[in-house]
Image 1 (spheres, rainbow, N blue to C red):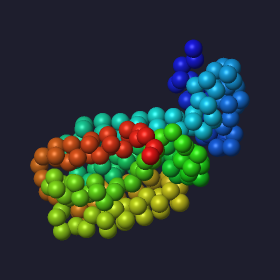
Image 2 (cartoon, rainbow, N blue to C red; image 1 turned 90 degrees about the vertical axis):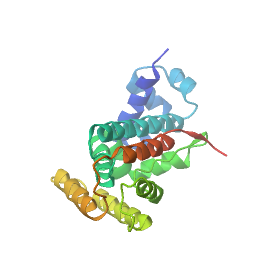
Image 3 (cartoon, rainbow, N blue to C red; image 1 turned 90 degrees about the horizontal axis):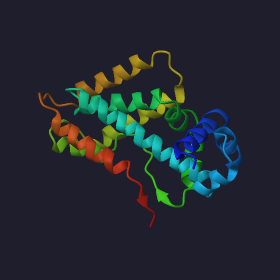
Length: 210
């Protein structure tokens, strides 16, 4: 029995190098060096393989983000969370392809997904910011929805103007602006870490479609 990871690795490689349309049962089988029947037995359609690939990548991204936040004494602050989210996207080849280089591929996977509903949104949502306010990590006078919209615009701008030779400096600059304008001055950020962990966990669990 072929390891499912071999199939997903092959699917990822084809998507990144050849594009969404190139991902078929035959191409996955060829790249994974297995029989077409083995691929179709695991995934009835090529898009099913891409959905599984997307879910694996999304879980991996947030697993890395959570690890970085846990290690950082200031990790429970919004500015640090945003830094680690951007870094995870730009440092992971598949994530960068899906969220920056070829968003149409991501949209196509989602449109053709029938079995599960996923939330492949890497933005900072208003409800997360509000939860961080309740936890004392974000200033109470900040409008959460406005901050969320501004961060979405910044993320979109980064994607449109990629690649960046000075990406680290850009991310550091955005983090500094958030730190000065949004973060509270607290010594213990563990409450914010708990908020993010709860939010990320809910995002990465597939939900049955209605």
